[in-house]
Length: 285
Ligand SMILES: [Zn+2]
Ligand SMILES: [Zn+2]
Image (cartoon, rainbow, N blue to C red; front, side, top):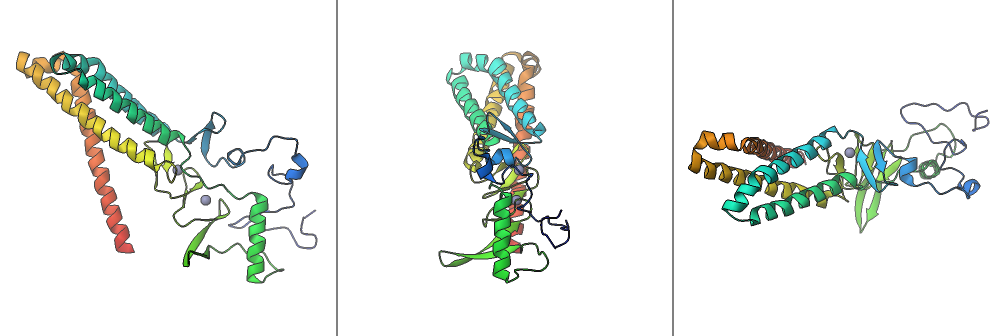
């Protein structure tokens, strides 16, 4: 039996209308399930995210590049502390491993905070809320009966005397705030969406962009720090036993220098790329 009585079966075109009469969704008719523990929004609408520790940790589904970031930082810093720091601390000052250690813990802390925290996901509309919104739109359009029409793509609201255009997200079924965007990888709308960063395995948005920029900044300091002292280590050894013998004595230094060098290359390239992208965007505006 169709829920609409006389009206025919509902068509599922590009946009599937929410039906308030179906009883399949766990979010509907909350008065009937008062005894059950209330479900949190992330449990009902997980998007494409993974959740751990009762929702305290969230990550994107594809985390392969994030593990690569983690391995690169751990291996490079580990080799530096194991092979360069004993020599440098003896010949120059013990402050080198101490400063390196502080930088390393800061980098790891900001990386994990960026990767595991909520970037500012906007909760999706529950079936009831979505149906209510559609009803309001129908009333506003003056079409109380007749065929079904999907909601308009934009809505204008007045905030502090200024007209602001809100876009409708057909996946989340909400009108999203001006600077929010839908991340296709995580399948969620994110407030003040900056970009989806595969290196940290998460979106960068309103709630984690501070940690993201602290991570980028501290990682640049750590890379320059390791690179500078690896070169110093090799130069000091070469003065004693020649350049080739210095490389033979400390092969790990070569690997660290190569990783740091390539990080600097990628970093400068991405800075230049984002500069060009900003220029293009401002030209379009
Ligand atoms: Zn969305
Ligand atoms: Zn994302």
